[in-house]
Image: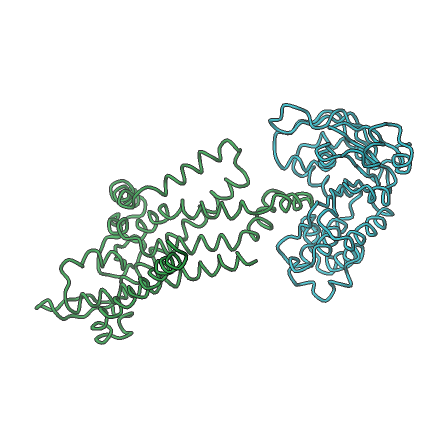
Length: 263
Length: 284
């Protein structure tokens, strides 16, 4: 894999939660390729969400985390930076606007649909009304929720269904034109139809954005992703093309997990 | 005890509170009749409280104590609300985990201090400071208002803190993940999310400030005149009632019931408003 195909690269990452005696991630190395979808699978507690949360440093909303190793972000403009070296608040803000995140449950803010999508844009300093309107519309279209919301942009986002709320959260993240989006089990709180819509959306997003997705759903990983990483007890057991992981895994544990023999 | 008896007994205790409420209102209203007939709604704007020579009749009006009550409460709220918000934000969003407990306990203990102690402390320690800083004779609206603020502060901070704690962590993280700073997360996510609880805490504290007697009796000066400066002495409804009850009779006594009725209605309205907010929050 060449460097210019890379969006992010995790190298020998060891992570310890504040006050914890044991490490939660043990020397994990994982590439996130540009414009591809990388799935992280593994049983509960294996560290896949922890890994995802290192990549935009959202862990550091709470203090006392310990990182060792390196996470490199390769921007489209050709720069590279070690995400773990960022210290100042404005550096972390810039990182989180470049590497967006979607959570397990839909998390609309207690404001209108329009303001939800405009929120990140306003934070990044865009004040011009016409520009805001244009970017919000584009983001909502990009998240396939424009048709359902265009007539009620000023209604509270709390009134949307769960699936709509999750697509709104994706729109909100997409509006910032991120380079990478991290999905932390984005469909675990949704019904199958909404799940389908979200998966379709993620697949469309990859032409613009590199995606890392944590999922408990094996079919979802196999349907959606280009690469899959299997994690167990804080270690990365195997990483490969998704079809290899599911059809011909090198590791016995990976095979047992993807065939449903444990986990 | 069979089910029927038990049902009736619990129904009885439940209705008892309702009867108490209506009963107290009816008693106040009945005893206030003489004054209501004598002064009507003008009572609200009469700025006199004068007994006749014989001690029976006289001219009585609520203007001065009503204004005193409202202004001292207003000062208390103006001081307490920003402080309570600050404490709650500090405890929920900023404080390190091993500081949260001691500060929370201190706040609860502050709420446990009887109001007479606040009154004495206010009179002997705090009033001279106010006199030094702002002039006047130390006791007056400002002193009463600030000590009232200190009294309602723990209660307001505790409820606001609980309300803010209900903001889901993942919602805050979502805002951080959009590039928000801590201040922006508090302003745009935590405050709107806990709005109903915050307003509820303010209104409940308001109810307490309106009715506080003991501390204010020490600190407001108990003078029957409208305050023109914040350092002026004046009087509030509960203080007037407490000071005059022992020797009042006839029309004055009835006028005091009238005042009590006004305070009752205002407090009741305030608490109902708070309930309304809490209820709405519960169904959301």
